[in-house]
Image (cartoon, rainbow, N blue to C red; front, side, top):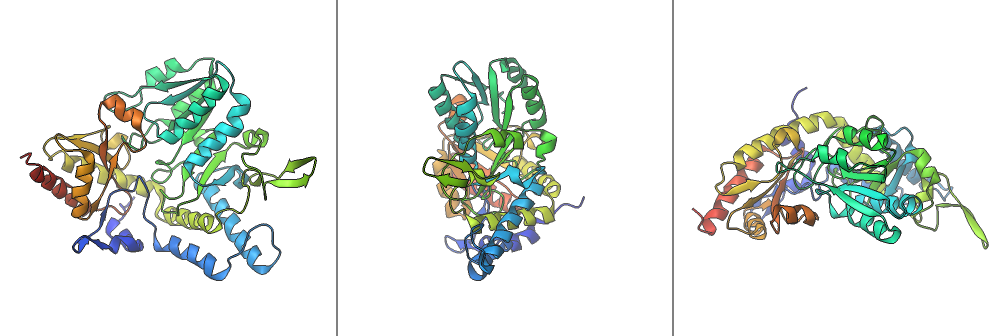
Length: 411
């Protein structure tokens, strides 16, 4: 497999040509927060608004038929992208957060009771903590957390120890948004099923960067967001096994999720529309379909291989910065994320000074406060990479960090 050429790929992303702050070329290293969008996605969404803007499913005129075909065609391609057995198992939502809340409200409130246990990990995003805390509080259930090691890896012996007959659901990130750790999804799902519990995968960070096969993983649910995978904001996906989705009650009520409404009761539409109340994000769904096409044409295996290379390059380059502490494991065990601290400088100051150099990174707790609390740090700086990140971008980052040290007189 030939390594992809990030310099060529950058030409597909108009915003990467942007200059900021005194004509400095933008270096975008915040893709874990949201990715940039290729021209193909922008054109697909503009094409909908320009040429066949209409509501889907309900109209019998030409524009509505075109919009419905494009929207449902996107669902089919997304299903193929994650190897879902049926497009009806692909539910459009706004984002990963909504998908996880849908599971908690619809499946959880019917199946979780007093004394039941929900097993999470200490490296979870808040979106995969708070919905389960709310559910547990309401139902009298218990939320337990599998710890991570000093290397930023999931403590697998503890995970197996924490699985008991009381465990009803395990929900975990297949890739950490702070450490970048790639967790062993298949092993976790199998162990979860072995004790009769359901497995939920938060794929917000993994689906954009790795080949993901829901049938191979055998997960019960998978949640991910469009905006982290070259698609637009405002659209995400919940995949669920059909038998589970059929049994679950609707999450929201209103148009499109009904088959029949009478004054004394209603009946629900078929999957996937049972969970898609109201006018959906039509342009966004079409845009996500275009993003899936774009990524598929490059190849997720090629993207992952390149990110391993660029992450290895970044970790080696960052190791030369005095006083730096990079969080998480080495490049072989993580995705394109390098969260770090520098002794004597707050992460917010690091980010602000880098921004003056045209380098965009993230600073804060990255919606993972428990992880940072365990590390006894208030926040971290995070550089994150994607298929358009070049070695020159990393070099600019390191140059900027060395300037940070000079500004704070650390040398």
